[in-house]
Length: 172
Image 1 (cartoon, rainbow, N blue to C red):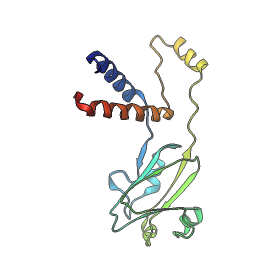
Image 2: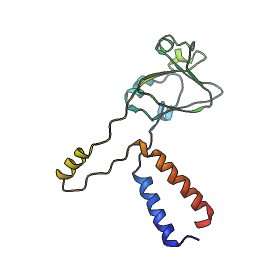
Image 3: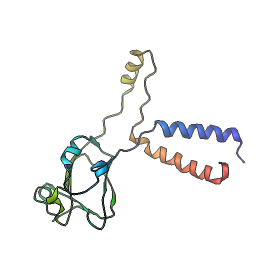
């Protein structure tokens, strides 16, 4: 049996890691308007910055629409020939694993109704060097912020899994 103080320490650690560790950003195409005809997705995309490890998600009525990842020719001509991906769930979460330009269109002729978006995914910025961190500490009276990059997503997932097992066993 684990003591109450050990559980409290673990719980505090769990809260700390959950609060500071960053995760991938989920960019919901069209925000509250979703993936539908007649929306300016170029304007939407221009107001977002995409990084490797982020997600792009499409929300739509699965009985009416779908999503294809195509090349630039497919995007320009609204054709799905040679598509590299096809999603139909109505809640599609697509990982952006490479720094490159991605092209997405709606099938069944919906691309001609504006259901198309292209995004540029940037590489992750390099983590701050120890020299940069030291300079920040020297140039500021307050403590320099602790920055965790997306590499700690796995640690956060592990902590969440352990916490759910631990707390699921009747502690709370």
